[in-house]
Length: 224
Length: 224
DNA sequence: GAGTACGAAATCGTATACGAAAACTATGGC
DNA sequence: GCCATAGTTTTCGTATACGATTTCGTACTC
Image (cartoon, rainbow over all chains, first blue to last red; front, side):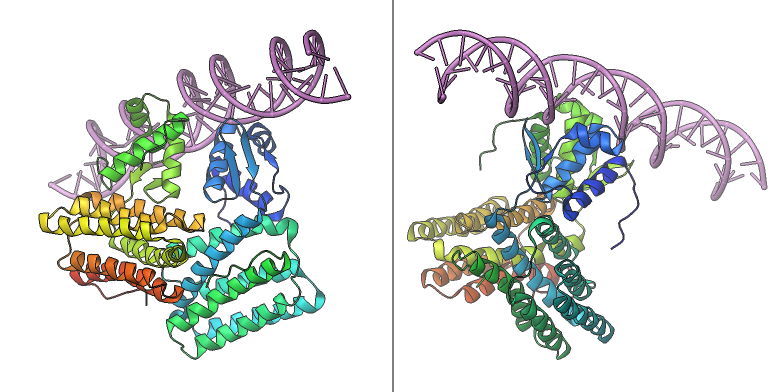
């Protein structure tokens, strides 16, 4: 996950602002004033503007004509859209990657999942989330379709900006998640067919969404 | 399909360049010189640059540092990635939309499909392609997840830049496509479950990809 | 004759500057 | 006391300008 070193200043601005959003320095609703960011980073407004537009394309920022940019909010509807889309994309990514995952990768994924179990006991939701991404990254690292992988990462980034301010364990869900990871690994090991793996992976994400919806007692809206 | 009237100049530049790419005025590989485009459009380079970066984010343009922008090429690998991704996204979009499609929309879709049949007889691949998008647009117009819809449109745009220079009927495939449309409508009418509809819609796109691959005798790589 | 090195032209990347639109504030009327 | 309105301030949108980098052409050497 090493970020490529700074190339252009717009790249630099992009990375800097994105990092601040993902880590929660800029919280949702935060007003991104171009001139102010430019000064902070020691560059002019032009590269900053370019960076902001790029973040807008990724959904991390909302840009309004002649008004300015704000960090995209935590709107539950947006969360639902993002999770539902991720459910579909991750399902496909897992199914496409499964045949290419070797025993070594499986072992690594298990190790990560084991660490996640530890996080449950020590109650460390932040690390849990990071490891969760690592787990799926291991599965996806040989994904044969880079477009799909890109969509996965976009979804993750979007969620990250939300999590930075609101993440907490949904009671019981995290435990389930760890169990589902193990089940998924066994499916992959056993050489299950693509459809089965896809459905399991999709359901894995959708279940988190359902748990969230149940908690905020809105209507259920799972992917299937 | 009316384009929203010009807002900012960067919006204007975006729409103009995108149109030229989609309609084939700028063919793949075409070098997009910022200053030249700026002059053509009567604006300065800054909005043009912004427009180009936006098109880059959508995959229509390739931008290389200190070198410049070119219209994204027709690389068969990219085509495969795009079609495979579209297969997944359209499948999901169709399944999600299906419960919300009423009899009126079905009738409209049938009318479009009928026109497509005519295009086959009159051998009009360009109009056939446009109608094909119309057909699916009717199905998707009430898609409950705008993110998914957005991904569909991005995929279509990418294909458009390719089609403008290379589109032709793949023997037999267009006829099949029309038949599959009708089968899809009947599935939706009959209230088939989401999984069935999703698989059918996904297969519909994947089959076109397979036909393409068969023609260019590469290995088969359907989504399933 | 082919390959390399140097220089000129083209093009990009970013800074600065200024006009335009929106947001904010204060003042006056009801 | 509250709302409408005018003026001020902030911030955006775009033009212009210039330094940096790449590319292309030419001359020179082996």
